[in-house]
Image 1 (tube, rainbow, N blue to C red):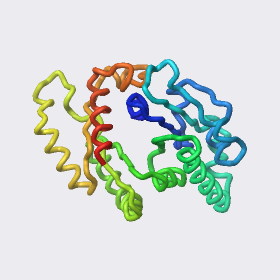
Image 2 (tube, helix red, strand yellow):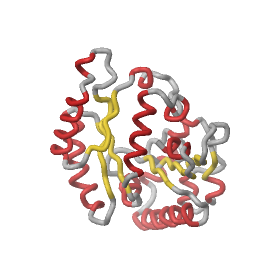
Image 3 (tube, rainbow, N blue to C red):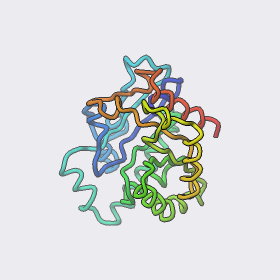
Image 4 (cartoon, helix red, strand yellow):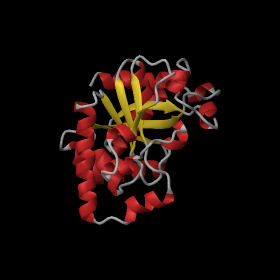
Length: 243
């Protein structure tokens, strides 16, 4: 999604705020000069921790990346070794970094990839966001978990002006059996889920097996622009642009 925005001409920054189980380092296969952990602690500057990854991707805009450290020691450090005073100081530092990325570095959008659940930095990332997108599968377990997240976290944040939307992931629609691809049935599911969890559904993404079982799917939204998944990402971008 971040790459899709960059492809239309925007300057975009994608930050891996899943500091408890970072994955973007494996996805992009990059090693930065400094990690977001260092940036939050004041041990590194933005120029060291945020770097451009869009060269060679033929984008109209720019895609920049900030990675959380994947080392076991750094994960333990940020999770359990700091007291509340440090956590609050780090949150203020992060909010200052966000302001600098917009005002001094000219970014149009900042995307925060968060961890699931209600851990400290997950909530921080949500609290720092203007729009929150929650992904879920349409199983009873996911529905119950999503309802709990909305009641405990999302409802509180929307009181301060944030918008939130639900994305249904791996729904029917890309099946070789046509009876599972009925758009009207998907619309019905969206309405039922929206009522059940109390959050509007902005998009449903079918389960594309070729992507799900691909060893290293990489920026399909721009590398395979005619693929059904890429078209869905484009649809999401167009819907959000209207808000």
